[in-house]
Structure formats: structure tokens, C-alpha cells
Image (cartoon, rainbow, N blue to C red; front, side, top):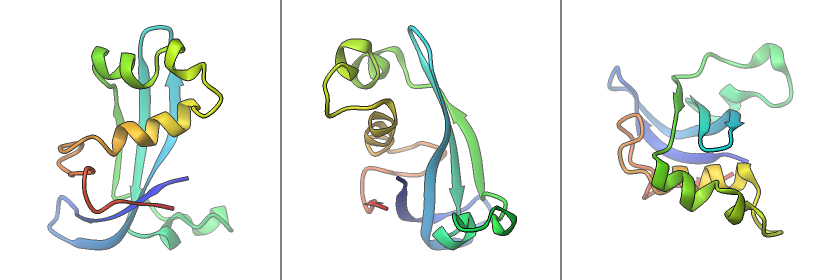
Length: 111
């Protein structure tokens, strides 16, 4: 599971098929930490061979606000059969218009 979208990195380089993924998630009682990795492309992530994984162009940890935690990650939300913390993490990311100066509300594709 990941998100693909065009982004411009901090050096001004356009990555037309950047690959954003949650590399690690810490779900705590009243908060969540999302460790997000963005690669220049899916091939830079290289699922098939760990030795071929490139350095991410963005690697940051993000902590959603209290109200976003309540909307996406609270136990009462995750209790349904259709929601998992990881699915909710990606749903949350796609609502952010300035996460690491990237607008994830448009032009995203689930991959």
C-alpha cells in the first residue's frame, strides 16, 4: 500500500511518479506517529530486492493533531472490520494539503 503522485522535491526536481509510503506507525493510546518515506519512484523503493532500495527524497515523522487522531485513529473508529490503522493512515495523508509542503488532496493514486 502506498500513494503515488507528482511532487517537486526541496531542490526543485519534479518527480512525476513519486511513491509515498508509511514506513513505520506508532499507535499510542491518545496519539499516533507516522514515519513517512517518499521515494522518487516505485522502482526506487524496490520491493523485490532490499539492496536496490534508494535513499528516500523525503523521510519525516508526522503526528496528526488531536482532532485528526479522533477522526482517523481513535479506538472507536478502528473497531470496524473495514478499517485498520494502516488504511486510516493513508486516508489521513490524502486529506493533507501541506504535509511536508506537498498537497496530497489532489492527484494521488493508490498503489
